Image (cartoon, rainbow, N blue to C red; front, side):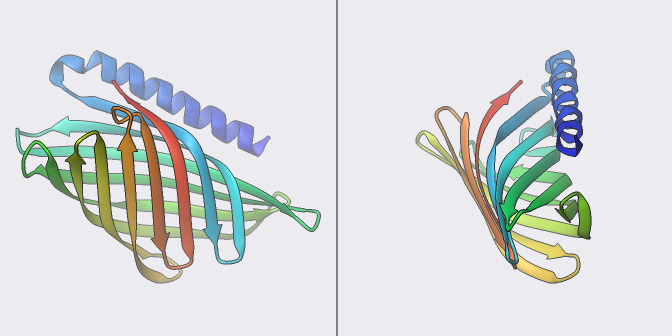
Length: 192
């Protein structure tokens, strides 16, 4: 029941975001939504699940963009008769500077809430402040992104996140490695 409720909340947010973006299309607000599968490893836990996210981009000028991102991912694993759940929600604000039409640099910061449950009982929660400094590069039919990522929570960790998008930017493969946290995702994305 817990995961169904979360899926309904995430789905309603994605639908409302796309409606909002279509209303503001004349102002060149761009919305991007992603939905896909994710494999997450944290400490001794490893599980599979899904990830849903939405991004609103507001052009400030021909060279700079302001954006906000909201994402939710959950994963599950059954081990020795116990069900384990790892949930993560992220809210980010960022600014991107377009060097040219093929490359940009970005800085974003925000909060991540992580929780780990065993058989519906919470084992731990962490509230993490995260900052990312990175670049996006378009090369032929591929879009690459790489960022250094600093997380401040129960521990302070430095790592990286990277992604590659292809098929007209509709399929995204992403990987994040920060401290004891690793995540590999495959998602489908679209812009409005």
